[in-house]
Image 1 (cartoon, rainbow, N blue to C red):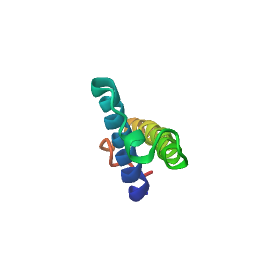
Image 2 (cartoon, rainbow, N blue to C red; image 1 turned 90 degrees about the vertical axis):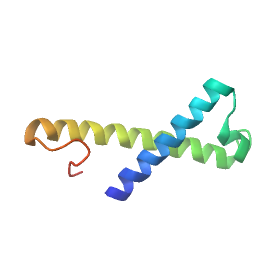
Image 3 (cartoon, rainbow, N blue to C red; image 1 turned 180 degrees about the vertical axis):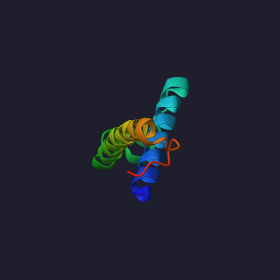
Image 4 (cartoon, rainbow, N blue to C red; image 1 turned 60 degrees about the horizontal axis):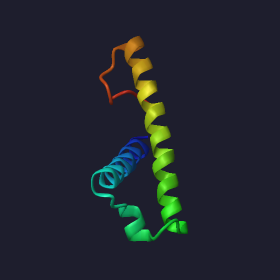
Length: 78
């Protein structure tokens, strides 16, 4: 599961950086690389969205386990 966790975190980070670029500089990196709503850009947006859901579920799981078992944040068995 570590591969899934790190991949999800990385994709969420990429999405966050893209939104930062849009907010600060009105520059969409995904659109610049893959084009405006092409199949590839839609795949990138979809995988970032799915990664955000996975990350949120993992964080909720770790918070629940931490309260029950006292594990360190980010080191929960998922």
